[in-house]
Length: 124
Ligand SMILES: Cc1cc2nc3c(=O)[nH]c(=O)nc-3n(C[C@H](O)[C@H](O)[C@H](O)COP(=O)(O)OP(=O)(O)OC[C@H]3O[C@@H](n4cnc5c(N)ncnc54)[C@H](O)[C@@H]3O)c2cc1C
Image (cartoon, rainbow, N blue to C red; front, top):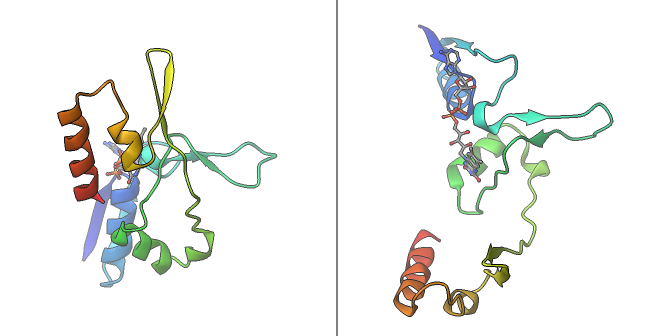
């Protein structure tokens, strides 16, 4: 079957890859001159690597994306560095890495801090 996909962002490219595995003939139409959509990259001539236009990350439990990266043979490029997160609010920097940091985040009420902690644990 001939299948046309509009848009060479993450979704269009992944759908094209999956459908091509079933021996469909895929054509992807992209209005821009480059691929990637919101996950598009740019690279200056002297750079060794391309950099995303918008900051992106994946979590270690984003199984679909990680399996796709392995399927593409790019797993060796995966790096999960330890990260530090802070919030800047009212001229003050609040560390935001641990459950203790959330409990000490006084701009939220205590109930809101507890709720934030529960939601974060659920999402993890
Ligand atoms: C600042 C920011 C941070 C983000 N951080 C993360 C993150 O950390 N982790 C994460 O998983 N996701 C993140 N996302 C979301 C992620 O970037 C998007 O969900 C994903 O890139 C969307 O892919 P898509 O292919 O569905 O759509 P898009 O990337 O929007 O691709 C659509 C493509 O279709 C093309 N197109 C549109 N109309 C036409 C047309 N008529 N003809 C031809 N081509 C057309 C567009 O040019 C584009 O290339 C972030 C997004 C932003 C903006």
